Structures are given as C-alpha cells and as structure tokens.
Image (cartoon, rainbow, N blue to C red; front, side, top):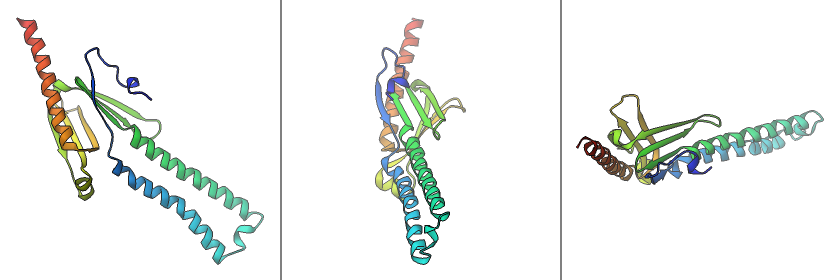
Length: 185
C-alpha cells in the first residue's frame, strides 16, 4: 500500500519522515514464533520415544495430523498478526502535520492527524537496557487540547526525532503566524 493512500498531500506539503518501530522490538515475536514451531516437533519425538504405538493407530494418527495442522495454522496466524501490527504501525511527519497510523490486529486501524503548529510539547523517553543499547524509545507529542496527543512507540533515535519535530513545529508556527499577521495588515 502506497503512502498516498493515507496522506492526501496539500500542494505545499512534503513528507519529511516516515517512521516505524525499531526492528529490535520485533525480535521477541520471532522468538515466540520459533518456540511455538519447535514445541510440536519436540512433543512428537517425545511421544514416539516413550509411547511408540500411540501415534500409529487408526484413530490417533488422523487426530494427530488434524491437531498438528491446526496448531501450525494458529502459529502462523499468530506470527502474521504480530508482523502486520509491527509493519503497519506508521508515523508520517510532513512539513505541515503528523499522521499516526496505528494497526491493532487484522481489522482495526486508527488514523490520527495533528497539525504541527498546534504542538505544545514534545517529549522523548528511553527506558530500559535494550532501548538504551539499541537507541530506541517513545516520543510523545502533546497539544493544548488534553484529548489529542500522539505517541511514537519504540522508534529509532527518539531524541533526534524530538528535535526534528520541534524544528518543524516552530517553522510551521512561524508560517501560520506570518499568514495571520499578513492578513491583519
């Protein structure tokens, strides 16, 4: 899916940054997926060693194949959902606004837009050993409205992103204030 599906750019608008979660944050899902794949193989070999005739019966063999196939499909579905959630969580920063695209599961997507000139505060936080080592963390963007804030979850280089957002917000604020002053005079 192309970014133009989410961003209907204004004539003067340019995409400055496209941000996703850091790749390190997906590693736990990969490890869980690999463990889930290894469990039936280990169980199969244990059952074959301890009870060699258990899986060869006329009823137990089809049931084992059915259970194993169902388990494998659920494992792949788990991994697919985790990947979709990781890959489709996206933050697009333009010279005019921030677009937060948050995927929750397979069929739930929330898109939030925030104008840069409305930004009141930008905070970055890096908490924990792995975020410190791999340089990823959260960036929280708040406005004067208590209901609208955007959190960039687990993005690379949160301090640099915070500085860039502050720079873009100041530039956009000058643009909007300059137009308001120009209209009054």
